[in-house]
Amino acid sequence: MTSPVDIRFVTATPEETAAFEGRIVLILDPEAKLGSDARRLDRAARGAISRAIGGKAWGKLKAGEAMELGYPAGIAAEALQLVKLPRKCSVDEARKAGAAIGKALSEAGALVLAGAHAQAAEISFGLALRAYEFDIYHSADKSHKGGVTFSVAKPEAVAAAAQPLMALAEGVFFTRDLVNEPANVLTTIDFAARLAAMQELGLEVEILEEEDLARLGMRALLGVGQGSETPSKVVVMQWNGGKKGDAPFALVGKGVVFDTGGISIKPAGGMEEMTMDMGGAGVVAGVMRTLALRRAKANVVGIVGLVENMPDGKAQRPGDIVKSMKGDTIEVINTDAEGRLVLADILWYAQDRFKPTGMINLATLTGAIIIALGHENAGVFANDDKLAGALLAAAAAEGEGAWRMPMGGAYDKLIKSRLADMKNTGGRPAGSITAAQFLRRFVHDDTPWCHIDIAGVTLPPSETTLAPKGATGWGVMTLNRLVRDMLER
Image 1 (cartoon, rainbow, N blue to C red):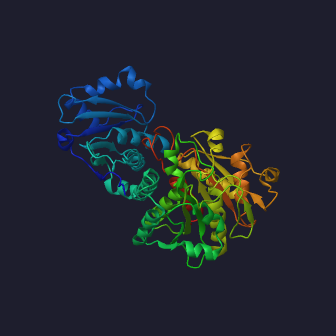
Image 2: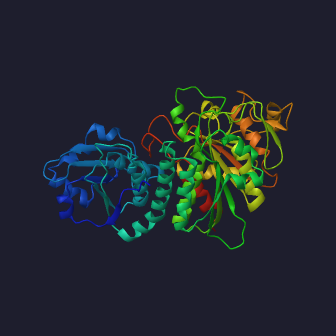
Image 3: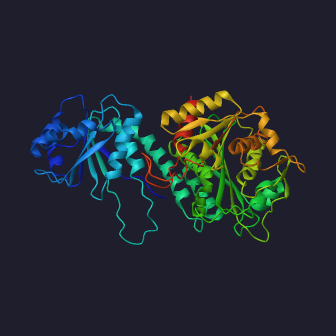
């Protein structure tokens, strides 16, 4: 998998700074005078820093933004990057500052003069996230970003604060890699193998094969993958870091490794992006990796349903009726509304086997949520106000957009079937809500539950503050924070 750039924390000498040949980054408080490191560097660079921060361009920068001086005279550095960041800044501003450094990072690496800045660890985290590169399929002209040295007043303390953040960065990278992989590489078999490899981190990983799923009665999930040559699977990951015997919290993810729409085939334009339809499973995997890496003091189970939705002579048809593990029958109106069929069975399985204290599922479920919320927010649906509030608070704390959407029995009439207990789509009106209402039928009344529709935030059309164009890993930070705040006490 892609690894975060190497970051170390030291206290650099003036001589080491002057001789550094990569990029030198200065974290500057706009309200304060230049510190001793900055003054020495300014003298060596013949006043270039003083002139830059005295100009109009510097004054227009917002907190966390940067300006660059290329090949400054008097020092060996290839560039000086001046980052505007108040000493008393928010976590979001600190991560944004780090992202500015990470985006500009070159092969020569960087020396970041952060001094005694209280948010140095968060700056390093933002840097790591934005420096992500997924270039394993580029055959030529590869360039890898160099390592980063943070010069700080208290290296050991900052390194300790950064340690769990780097575990989180690795979890985000794991999710991004999974979403960015093409479907001919990330088959259900390969996906399951990557999850099984996390046993070396201390996770308990179990792979349920098609025979197991048939025996359990997961006909809704199996129906989605029956037109594919790659077998459907369910992977169960357990992290038992909490009190022995305590019921776990459950994370459930949709893992459609490629979605053609099946017999209800999608238009050709943009179909290549349906490699991201396993994004929910990718987030669950990234969270479980993070929990294991940071040795979280909580019991959490992650369950993902891995299928491929293909058109074939054996594929599920519109009009078919399938029976779920719960026992409810479902009329398949549209084979492109397949994710909810996958989730229906694994939501029921999670409750039947683990009796979780609460449950959250994630899925790139509907295009309707993009129409409603664009690419700025994931849609949150819930049967429990307390869990929904905790989830939204965690998302806000991590700077990941999330917005609660309505639910209600009035929408159920849209998925009422003449022939079965329900149908798998209610059409275009309230499309994301009827999908949530469908899932709600597979959740016990006494199980606190949230459904997060991440269709708009998993693979946005342009880069974001903390990620280059491509997969964002949205949700790993939020759910890691939720586990920490709600379960680790």
